Length: 210
Image (cartoon, rainbow, N blue to C red):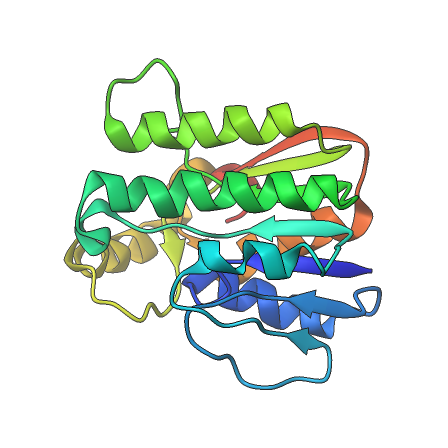
């Protein structure tokens, strides 16, 4: 099968890319990125500083499934509009194209705060992307809502550096839903979901990933 991975340079996306390339039933991984990835015999890596500009090229690369691990923060993106472009516009645009080309399975990294009823911009954007991915009509849809994501990021996040050591210390007594979710575990759930492509919708939460 051919799998499209969005967000392959991020913490979860890097893990999903590695696992997908190692997966026996995945023949090709297509990973559009802003900077080139290390070469691999199974990897097709279109590169552009503007990912949306790759959509016409992606129309010539039909896939069987999509893993979307795209995500940023408003601080890193620089504005609400830029954040929405990464977390909503691009995932929905690539999802629509992949579905039109015949993709049957989609796995999305979302957020435990995703909601259309919460006025917070971040939560509402996550709720909107979940809603609109559902509306595209994939035969198999998996939404993953991890809690705190553990792993080595490219960028420094002060809050994580402060909270993670405490969370690790308290792990034995913390409820499963409040434990750190290793990025590799999240990626494993994503890859397994598209490889199995079970009909219907599934929700995977922090309790399932710790």
